[in-house]
Amino acid sequence: MNDVIVSTVKQFLGVTPIMLVYLVGLVLALVFWRRCPVSCVLTLIATLLLLGLIVTSTFVYQYLFHARAEMDWPPERIELMYSVIRFVSSLLHALGIGLLLAAVFAGRKRAQQVGPGKFQ
Image (tube, rainbow, N blue to C red; front, side, top):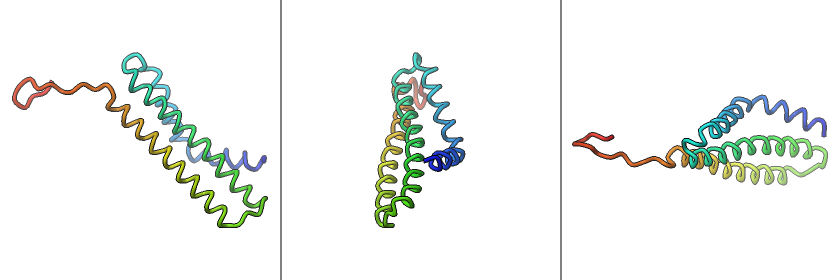
């Protein structure tokens, strides 16, 4: 089990930049909460989801990598498990990005035309 933790910490080094971006997004959502609450709620949910996804998937992949050898699982079983995890992870990642896109446009007012070709 100790090997899993050491390997996982090493894996986190590779995703540190994206984790920092998600943490900054989380802080910004809290800072701008009063100005645009709907966008901030969506951003908060998305960044928590994406950050949790990175942490969880890293631990799961490391656990499976080490458990594969210890439990002598056949390659087909490992491949199926990795495929399912990748698919679920991809769906959750798409959901997180979708929430961020929704946050960008949430609460925006439609531009009003004040003259020919001019918007306010």
